[in-house]
Amino acid sequence: MAPSGPIQVRGEVLSVRRVGAYFHVTLLAQGVAERVRPGHFVALAVGGESSSMLLRRSFSIYRAQERGVYGGTVEIVLAAHGPGTSWLAGCRPHDPVDVVGPLGTPFALPKDPASCTLVGGGYGSAPLFSLADALRARGCRVDVVLGAGSEDRLFGVLDAKRISQSVTVTTDDGSLGHRGRVTDVLPAVFARADTDVVYACGPMAMLRALSEVAAAHGVAAQVAVEEAMACGIGVCMTCVLPVVGDDGVTRMVRSCTEGPVFRGESVRWADVGTVPPDCLGAPLPAGGH
Amino acid sequence: MVDLRTSLGSAVLPNPLATASGCAANGRELSRFFPLSELGAVVTKSVMLAPRSGRATPRMAETPSGMLNSIGLQGPGVDAFVEHDLPWLQAQGARTIVSIAGGSIDEYAVVADRVNGAPPGSVAAVEVNISCPNVEDRGLVFACDPMAAAAAVQAARRALDPAIPVLAKLSPDVTDIVTIARACVGAGADGLTMINTVLGMVIDTGTLRPALAGVTGGLSGPAIRPVAVRCIWQVHAALPDVPILGVGGVRTGLDALQLVLAGASAVSVGTVVFNDPSAPVRVLRELHDALEERGFERFVDAVGYAHRSFEQEYA
Image (tube, rainbow over the protein chains, first blue to last red):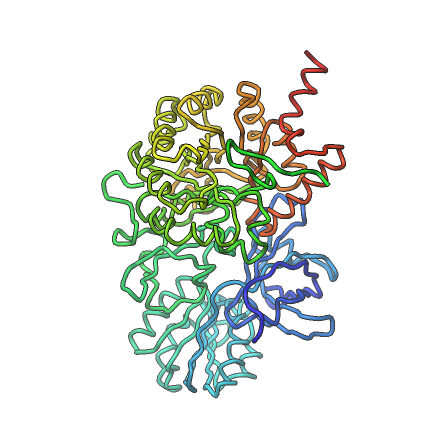
């Protein structure tokens, strides 16, 4: 059996490559790759050892290879929208990067061959390609829907064509594919592919809308959420969201540890960003906490 | 090799390195990165009587060399903690300092009583968190008032076996921390933990609104280390015989040494764990080496050392 659980390793940047509006970063991270399953993420320290940026940045794993030319590698895709991600995007080959991973609870895979639709928003599509490999290895049908604001914000269209039965692209501005949102095209894809399970990763608003469409069509949804995390390892309690358990009780659960992958119908999307009054341990109406 | 043994009241620890409350949960997650038995102590996340959901998100904002949090003491409640977490920590060989909190003096007494009912040997000390700034009513921060601080400490002290040392965790957000420290010691605290987070606020310049759902939050990380060193210095100068668990912005062994030289008998690492999950054992190693390089044979000889040289040179 492969080793499991996260480890902390001093990794090394092998390459940083521009892909559309994003950066594709390959990291040498010995011991991490063989533990990775689709949906896992890594948490990277940024800015160097004495940086004033204290919090790690978490990224879903695009690809993990146990035996690359240099050893085990992990690949991530990022948008350089803050000082931490910009630092990573500016790294050069052989720069050291401290890596903790793999983290989180990965996607649940169907036991029997099923028809699976994979939906990615922007660079949120990154973890879907290794997932597709795992699904196809189980004899599943894989269809892909990729959406973004504009063409340069799509990630992995060529990859998707290689691994799937069909690829549908949507952009908000119509620069490629269908003009609109992924949820506009999902019912047709579900019908054409006779979808059993939809897997998704992307912005929270997309996941919410997608979960509703999936529920309306009787399709099971596995969604990887994006919540701000301070630690990524389950100790800080910053990345919580309201999730209904199998016992029907809502709890504020950590997206880093119990997630990032949740069943779409278990997340109380309308209440994300709040503590619902019926949540376990919610503040009392009078006094509160 | 430096003799690293130390003590916090009657709690004898093999070394002075501890986690900080709220930054290590109840130990399980960090145990994936190093054996908890290697630390002097694990300080668990403050537990209250009933399960608590904590506050709404966003609960966190990164700041220069630190972060702001408004978690709101999310946790399972003391009964689940005593039943599940304490025995597990004991089985790991960890020395556990249990952090307790309450919304009322009564709650401190009841939570302390439940902790007191834990199996013998599973509780090395109890830290009474009278300074969490994330209760919704700032009037409930006991640590800002000497009478309220003393009442909370006394409630916990009375409920606990006298053999279990009680540490009062103080807030730096007070006019005179020495007054609060004296009140807590007068109420039966065997030691003090300093400091808790500093109340702060971040405004998101994109949304033009407070960045945290809780509006204000606790600032932690290296940004507050000078505040911690100052508080420990002041209290150690006034109460040299009261042991102090130093907390606040420790990232390296030299940071820990500063707190020790100011008067801390042990040191917790908190927010840096989010940056480096192995930080507790790394800082311990670095502290050992720093003491050795400076010619200390025993850790305890360094406690409060900065006061001594100060008096000799400038008295």
